[in-house]
Amino acid sequence: MKRIYALILLSLITLSAFAQGQEEEDKFDMSVTLNSDIFFGFYPFFAGSYGSGPVDFTFYGILWSGGAAGGTWGNWTEVGVGIGFPIGDALYVSPQIGLLNGSLTSGLGTPVLAEGIVPNLTMSLGTDALEGEFYLGYYAGFDHGNPSTNNYLHYWLNVGYKVSSFFSAGLHFEQLSYTGGNNAPEDASYAFYQALGPYIQFSDPNGGSFARFSTGGDLRSDEQVTKSGFEQPSFYKLTVGYNF
Image 1 (cartoon, one colour):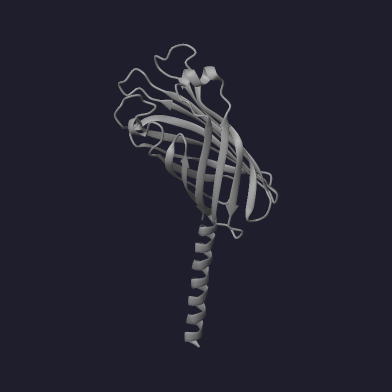
Image 2: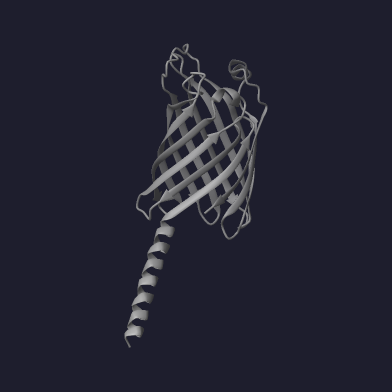
C-alpha cells in the first residue's frame, strides 16, 4: 500500500512539474528570420516575448552585416528590449528601445559599443482574413569623439489579405531617411529610398515557417535622388523565417 501511495505522490509531482514547464513554455514566443534587401543586404533578425499578459517583456536583435555601405558600418549590430501588449483581439503593440553598436550613427569610423540608440515601435495586425505590420524607429548617434554624428528615420507599413492559410498578398510601403546629426547643415535630411509595391507570402498552415517577397518602385523625386547620391529605381526584400 505504501508503494501505491508513493507512486501516486510521484505521479502528482511529475504532472505538476510538467504543467509548470508547459505553462512557462506557453509564456515564451520567438521568431527568427533571414532577410536580404537591396539597401541593407543580408541581415538575420530575431524577436521574442515572455509573459501571458496583460503586458509582456519583449526583446529583439539584428545583425546589419552588409548592404550598400556595409564595409563602413563596423559590423553594425542592434539589440533591444521593451514591452508588448494586445489591443483588442487583432492588434499587438510593442514599444522598445535598442542599443546600436558599430560605426554608422556615431560617424567614428571605428566600431564601438553603444554608438547610438533607437527608440522604436512595432504594431502587428492579425485576424482570420487580414495581416499587417507597422514599424517606426529613430536611430540617434552618440558622440564618441567624432563631432559629426548621423541620425536616421526608418519606417514601414504593410497590409495584406489571407487568400488561404497557405497564401497571402498585400502592399508594402517603406522609407529610410537621413535626418541630420551633429554639425549637419540645415535642411540636410533626405530619403535613401521611398518604396511602394506588392508582397506575397507563403506560410505553413500549421504555423511555424514562412517566406515573403516584397517589391516596390522608388517614389522619390529627382531632387531627392540627387541629394541622397543613392540612385535606386526599385526595391525588393526577401524574408524566410520561423515562429517558435
